[in-house]
Amino acid sequence: MIFNKINKVYLIGVGGIGMSALARYFLSQGKLVEGYDRCSTPLTDTLISEGIKIHFDDDSRQMPLWVKEKMDEVLVIYTPAIPAGNRVLGLVRNLGFKVYKRSEVLGLITKESYTIAIAGTHGKTTTASILAHILTETGYGCNAFLGGIAANYNSNVVFDSDSKTVVVEADEYDRSFLELYPDIAIVTSMDADHLDIYGEKEQLDKSFHLFVSQIKSSGKLIRRIGLNLKGGITYSVSEEANYRATEIRVENGAFLFNLRHPNGILSDVEVGLPGIHNIENAIAAFAVASELGIASDKIILALASFKGVKRRFEYHIKSNELVYIDDYAHHPEELKACIRSVRELYPDRKITGIFQPHLYSRTRDFADAFAESLSELNEVILLEIYPARELPIEGVSSAMLLEKISISKKSLLQKKEVVEDLKDRKLEVLLTLGAGDIDQLIEPIKHQLAESTL
Image (tube, rainbow, N blue to C red; front, side):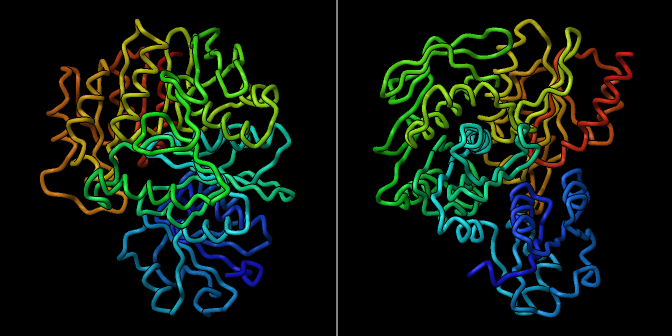
């Protein structure tokens, strides 16, 4: 497909973080962009303010007329997060459109570009955002499609019309990353996930191996040491690798470390993000920038100015009396990393976590691991499972998960009950955790905590 023949783009599921990045990209290219999503969110409000018309009713009368006219100049994109039986998706298919997955469109966009793809079951968004910031801040330049809102740009896209380099997240869900043929690929992690798609961990590993095999012959693999992969350039925070952090310490709320790399040692590298896992993400981004020939001193300055990604260990309240952090963690390993990072920063404080499980299948497949991770909290509040694209699975519920959690201070609440419940709790450190719509609680919680403080 040649995008310059397209002048209108319709996105089904436009409010998703990956889909909204495509919407913004095509809008920047001068296309007329409209879309559908099932509910309004702060992100869809922002898209509307930027000039993208969105409807939230699946009634066909709400769709733009130009979609129904089946014009050759129309590109229709959907996300697999939309249920197969969705009426809007069914209608455009019945009209005869070839409907493209988001990953297919990313593959087409990156086909003629120098592509840096970041893969992994965890760490993709932070690593991609750090790398995009380094390339932008050092003047190397890039266009980037991110899975979160980078605080430096208040956006999930970075545009540079003069650059032919694209930074993109390579999503393993639904084997989407197999649409990409990168020049450089980072693999951050390969933990079991998406077993509703893969069935077993071995099949997930096979997909990662296939993705790595699609790196161009002149390209490079950069991988965290210890993964079930061979070759490439390695990085680590704890083991011997081509790029490795040593002497990690915390000073003034930021991590400092020395970085051993193929050309020497750099002292006092600063990363203002909490958690050892974020040092590792920063090292991966450093490795790519270094392999591209960017001077080390420029990379270090860029790293120090990176402000983070919204919903990735995002502080909303940070005072001597109370800390409130929101995080996207929705896999047991992500929860464990987040909670341990908080424990490291606030070792003597009580940590209360509100967690919304994401997907019935993931809750079923990792129930014991979820319970183990959540039991590292002092108090836990569970919300009902966010189903996303799935129908309920018999016997799988938040109540089932609650029983497995070993700490005594645990409860199950409806989302609408949370803010009122917090009034009666003595909070020291509060976490909201999950990938569903738990983010809709952030502002009400902040308002309630501000009121209680006053």
